[in-house]
Amino acid sequence: MVVWVFAGGGEAEVRGLIPFLKQNFPGCQFERKTPVRRKPGPKPNPLMSYGRTGNSLIEQIQEQLPIALKAESNQCDLIFVFDDLDCRNPETQRQKILASLSTIPDCDQVPKLIGFAAPELEAWIIADWDNSIAKHPDFRGRHERMRWWLSAKGKISFNNPESFSEYDHQRDCCQDKLSEALIQSSIQDETDRQRLRFSKGIHTPILLLQINGNEVKKNVPYSEKYMTTSRIFVVKTLKTAYNQEKVSINILFFV
Image (cartoon, rainbow, N blue to C red; front, side, top):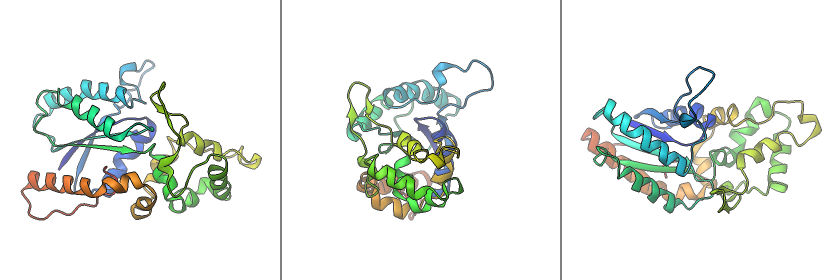
């Protein structure tokens, strides 16, 4: 089953999302269409820049999906759009994306699945702290201080990291960034400031491959709420694509 992935974001999504999907869904072939890989050179095209999310990601899909459909006709079994929810309303965002996809020629017959990380991918890492940050050598000897700071100062619930921050109407995103809180937690103690700080580009891709899906599900109620519906959707898609009577797929995070 060939899945075209249109993801928002930057380094974490470029380096981490596809390996994570491949690890959790070995029966699928994932092809990343966005973020578009930067080509070597001093002047990258700003239209292909990282960090496209929300309405900007929708615009990028409008640009890139028709190109892919023309170049690779009948090569896609599922279009998967994935973005940081960033405190936006999930159903509003879902309908925006689906409405945009409905205007693109030649993709009406391709099944579509919309997924979000609420508010960012780092929520999954925090949700399974013991298998992620606590075990990574870069945070040895300070992960407990980081956890205390995130809870006491950052006001992050480890039982529900998806609840972090509130929506900023002017900026169309969260008032505070969860990933920035993780960065700050890694340099709060004076003894830690000479050590490598948390990096969304370096650590998030690695830690995504370390988390235990069953542990994450316990602490991300948004993902858990939609998990059953999404599992049924993907199984039906697989059955249609391969005409199989029985298909089993572990779908922990498609929401």
